Length: 210
Image 1 (tube, helix red, strand yellow):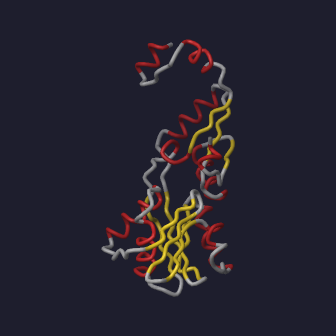
Image 2 (cartoon, one colour):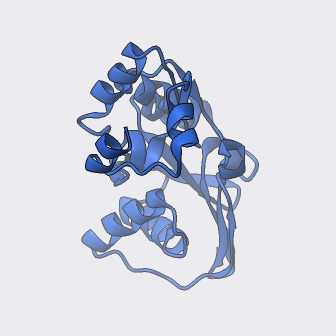
């Protein structure tokens, strides 16, 4: 068993670990980079009462200080469109929720619908747009300032070509496959359906995954 594992790049610490692997009944997989490619890209830019450039300018200035894969997708898109990045102050990252900073003396925010709801008024139209993106497996990131949502930037991470087959093989072995993600419920369920997992746990922060 150790020999077969080694040929496939799998190392077992000891015989007991190998024996335990044979008794596994549930596998929990993180979504980003495991089930998906881990290389999100911007798919949609929806500004409200401002231009695409103005929305991207705010988003770029905020996200450039974040290490999150979704932030990198926005930074990449802004650089591709040659958007100007402005210096911000008091940058704060709330893990799994969103970002805040001060730009030109104004507090700006970016993050999930749940997070932005605490910072700005959300109209039925904005909520509907965010849910529509989530239902199609995209992650809607909302941006706000002065108690107003300035727009939504939707980001998507594609499911790896072999994920569905891998999940199917695990299920054929009698193993229950669970997907963990910080994404909202709708986005998570859309991706979980493509991958074919048994159950999805959405809105899970890093410490919650552990």
